[in-house]
Length: 118
Image (cartoon, rainbow, N blue to C red; front, side, top):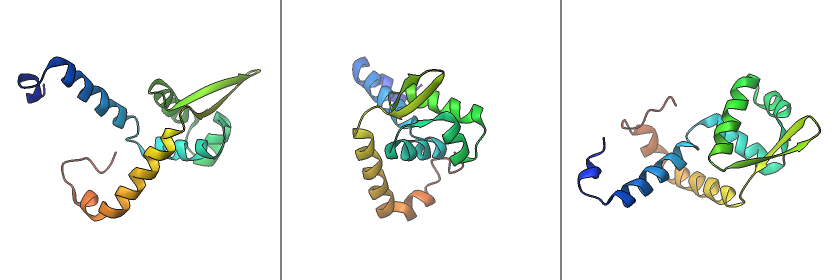
């Protein structure tokens, strides 16, 4: 349990936990690449599998995570489900992150407090 529990109001702790969970939704390179591809246009799972060269089950799992967190949404056309970015602010978030990473890459790579392998 976080030591913040002892010093912050419950509502603030919940907001911090929710914000951390929001960022964990972006905390995987495959999910980030899926968002990049979906920012270009909506796509079917099979197309994402072909582009990413990742097993269909893994792509579907990442899409489920992105969907649950509100990053992507789906439309159904017959038996096919097409995914697209749910909120145009996702582009701004990713652009800002890339800019910050470009300015701080050396420090980020050197950080031993965050697992680099994830």
